[in-house]
Amino acid sequence: MKNLVFLLEEPSAKAMLKGVLPRLLPENIFSEFIVFEGKQDLEKQVERRLRCWMKPNSYFVVMRDQDSADCSKIKNRLYAKCINAGKPETLVRIACHELESFYLGDLVAVEKGLSLAGLSEKQQKRKYRMPDKLSNPAAELSALTNNKYQKLLGSRAIGSHLSLDRSNRSNSFNVLISGILKLMRVQAV
Image 1 (cartoon, rainbow, N blue to C red):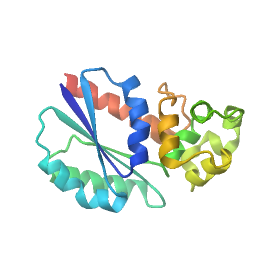
Image 2: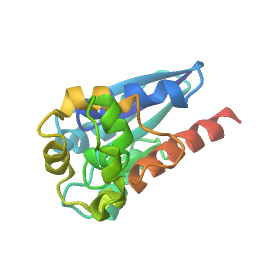
Image 3: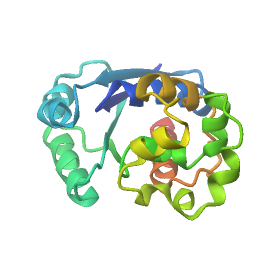
Image 4: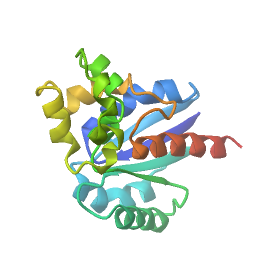
């Protein structure tokens, strides 16, 4: 059995992935989650956690929010930590700007997950066509849903409805999904 280990900044990312991964991965791949207490905790501990991981057949994905930092610098810094830990094959992905960009990129999923009507029609609005460019997607999603979206419960509800066929308008979500699939294909060989 293969283990796909996610090192995550926050519990809401785990909740979202628990809705996505069963539809994405074959049954012979077991997913595990290491959730940190924010991005500083993730960056502080990721190298040690990777270095000390002992389960064979394990593959790693490190994911965190961009927030207002430079995406390339974050990714390069995290990848350097993975190399230092002896795990250069680790997939590093950044949610631009926040995890909620993934949800704003698929308003059909938000509509279904939160049992709200009329959201999917707003997908064609300029700001929802490229949600990765929004500087505060969490606030935008909260306002759009009249505060029905709550970080953890909303991620749990929406995750199982997110489209996996590249129709999501969040490029960072699509890059995450394609990266996971590529990582698992490469490891299957």
